Amino acid sequence: MILFDLKCTSEHVFEAWFPDSASFEKQVKAKAVQCPVCGDTKVKKAPMAPRISTKSEEKPTTVVSDDSDSKAMELLRELRDHVESNCDYVGSEFPEEARKIHYGESEKRGIYGEASAEDAKEMVEEGLEIGQLPWLPRRNS
Image (cartoon, rainbow, N blue to C red; front, side):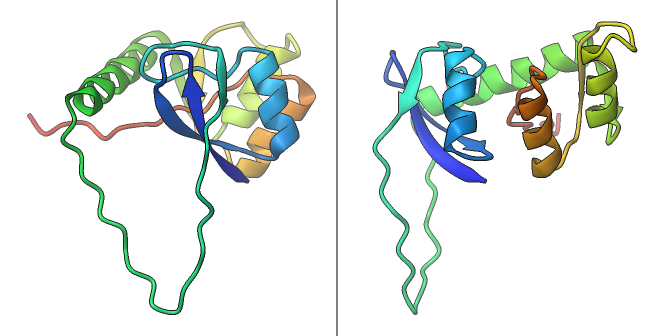
């Protein structure tokens, strides 16, 4: 798996995992990769700094204080609510059920669940239209 920093035409920068560079290119060409902030499908790789290991690794500090970050988080929460309200949860059976739908063996509908990186790679190679979403935990209310 490869982690890329990506940028949309609105200059939003985000990360996404891909099985390999060819999968990234194929998904971008098919407009299957979209910005989690604005939904733009015109994305490209953003400049990335290589991670260099040192003997005394320090844990990076993450600071989230920018207003655009909180807006992005709220959009991701809304996305989760939309998926949960409009799609069927199939859990670990996701790869099998996605294939059944793709090959016409099961009713066409929106589904969500879990898949290993290897299963996801195989599904993309088979031509299934799948995507990985950042799944935020529920807020305690």
